[in-house]
Amino acid sequence: MTDHPELLNLRNFSGRVEWIGTTSTKSGPLAARDKIELVANCGIVGEHHFRENSQSHRQVTLIQKEHLSVIAELLEVETVDPADLRRNIVVSGINLAALDGREFRIGSAVLKGTGDCPPCNRMEKNLGQGGYEAMVGHGGLTCLVVEGGEIACGDAVTSS
Image (cartoon, rainbow, N blue to C red; front, side, top):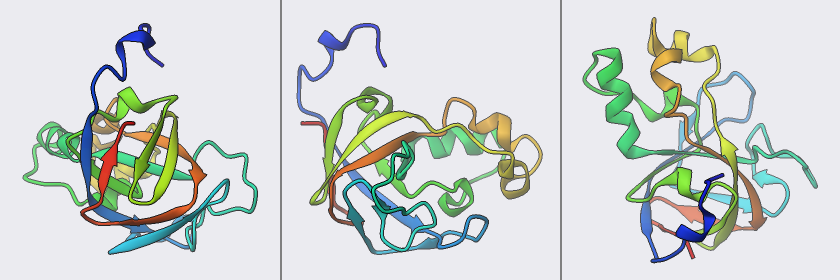
């Protein structure tokens, strides 16, 4: 959360869904999807984190497209594959950190930011030596599903 919540939401920001990925198993590879269905308090249908009436703060994970180039630069590679980062949705044009603790809309679903999404030790395997360190501070946002709906590539991400 921010130290000055009164300075948030002073103007409407919007972003865009650039990539979507899911996996049905905990350690399986993420497959790119055109769209996904979300269920309130459960997560993404078919995703390994999906649970009926889940109390998990990590029902959906997001990462900023703008951070992908930072991660790649820190690793001294040209690009990173979003599937290797193990986040469900890549968005552009909106500061995810400012959405922590707030509700926002993507497509027809409403999510609530629940905190940073720190990297796991799999980043060393997926990205190579230094992958974990490159992701620190750039891991994105964990979210709850407040209202179910559908999210598709190209959908708007709106802060209010």
